[in-house]
Length: 419
Ligand code: UD1
Image (cartoon, rainbow, N blue to C red; front, side):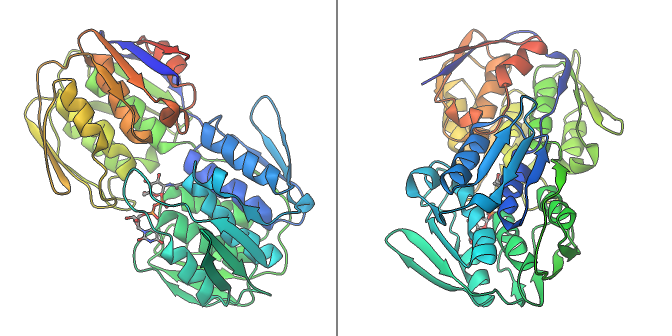
């Protein structure tokens, strides 16, 4: 397994371009299944999860053409299998996103149950209940969700919990249902909005996306379109924390400052000077040590759970003490034990981590346990004394495009050691 070798040192300084958002690209690629003609998706990030999704669609008979700029042309009409097999779903939970569109368009869909996950149990009951409420016949047997429906029927769908992929699955399914669907307590994440805009570009009738009530008037057919994925706000936030943690200055380009209000306000509270333009953000912490901040994760527009591990690393070297309260997922403090091995002072009490900043972390061999946990270990390695070796970086390759090249561009001493 590849490793990242990081020698801690000076501040990050420079500019970096942000890629398309993984969490928008995944549902949008799944949503191409709804179309009756080829679709062109642009600004698709080059990530392992995207390759897995393309492999999944390819196994179903869908034709994909990828150019060197990562524009992906999808021809969904060649589909000849309606199964998402275990060996692919187990490597990427988001494979569940093909369930709704496949069922709505072709009337059948067999998707392996994703199973457990390192950051909590992450059930899919709300996806299943919603599709059942739309008239689908669903059995869960042999580790598979087997869904059948002649034509789904629009209905009122109340979500018990705010779920991002749950909202997306039902939103996609409702576009081709008969009649009107209303998703209440819907996720408001920008990636849900991007998916809705993509569906609209194919002819779907959707209003209210970005609020907690989304209304979808079903149509008979969706046709292919051309769409460019929005920038990745989590990748954006991660490089900005890189500036703050290292006492440096980073300008991220090709991004959207309006998607990061909660994160930018915490970076300011930590002492960073934040400037923004239409498609760029700069954080300047030159010559200063960050101050610890308190973080409380919750669905958008509150502070994203996908940024809490990076702020744990920031607090670990900050002045004072800060808390991280995780309310979205159980068991999302896997990075804490690794940070402690690097000399961080962190105590976990239930769903809260209390972090007392230390002057310096020490480089150590550490293990990536999930995607965002790995990002926090890389950030810690950038400012630790000596060498940090981050093992199992396939986690990071699932969500960060060319992370070592981008960090090298900012002056970091980081290299990949292939196994
Ligand atoms: C998505 C993101 C992930 C992010 C998360 C929360 C993608 C591909 N992934 O994951 O990066 O960390 O949102 O912002 O977009 N739940 C249920 N029943 C369900 C569905 C969810 O109880 O049927 C619970 C989960 O266990 C969790 C909470 O709802 O506690 C939120 O999870 P959810 O929003 O569904 O996360 P994902 O969509 O899997």
